[in-house]
Image (cartoon, rainbow, N blue to C red; front, side, top):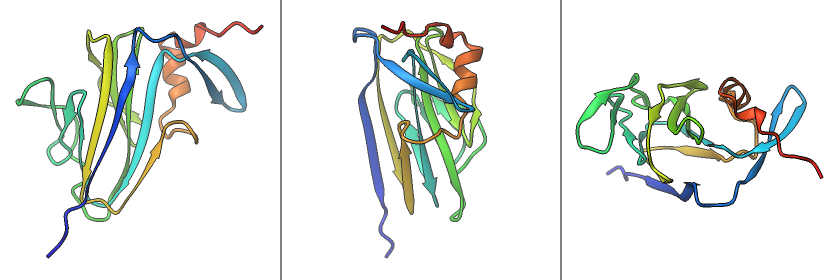
Length: 162
């Protein structure tokens, strides 16, 4: 009998508009910028079979549908994590200027979703996986976060140096 492995991760304060502005470092081609943390983002690499749900809204990996505050799924992206030897890198982000959540898969941004919430708690569940790696910024992201922030005007808010 095969044991089903299930693992869940939660970030209760993934974004909270009431908190003091945070700062973050952005690196690109050796260039370091200290900017306001107006974008929240992390990535998870999953090896093997994976059924993933991001509970801001959630995406089913086996059919690629997204569920937006309801039990009715809409086509969103291609299915993934359905082959035993697959590995993928998934990203989850929120841009506070655009008020959009976004997902990435293997470095490619999927369509954004506008929301009107003042705080976000993020939950992630994976099943039938062999190994996972969670990256909250301790190493370079697979997705080009610098380019995303630059093209959406987030880098114009440099933190003043004392």
